[in-house]
Image 1 (cartoon, rainbow, N blue to C red):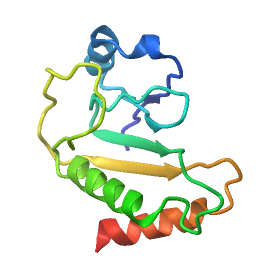
Image 2 (image 1 turned 120 degrees about the horizontal axis):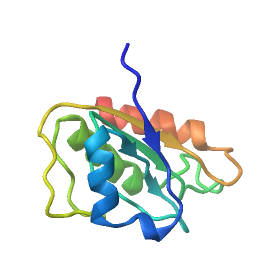
Image 3 (image 1 turned 30 degrees about the vertical axis):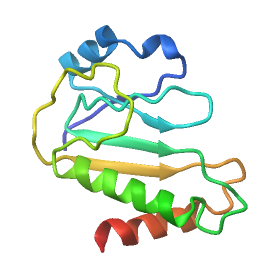
Image 4 (image 1 turned 120 degrees about the vertical axis):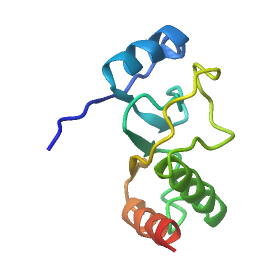
Length: 129
């Protein structure tokens, strides 16, 4: 098994082309964070994508509403196929990563974590179905 690395950054100063180039050079992924405060960097720099979906709600049984789950399912399938979905903020938008199938990991993390497992199950159904 190959050891792979991912970094999670929490400051907008990392949303620059030089950071993406550095990650790409060493084939290190950056966490694709959907969060209220942390920056989203959707640049693919490794042979996998690691998404942390953190805008879920404990008030929603599936953590995310159905349209949010549908949107993320399509994005994750696009990443897995080796493409890049539209509508996500990249730090080096002119850069085109190698088009090859890749592993995709997605995790739900919300404030109370009450419905995160439900969200994961619902997202998995959408990705597989």
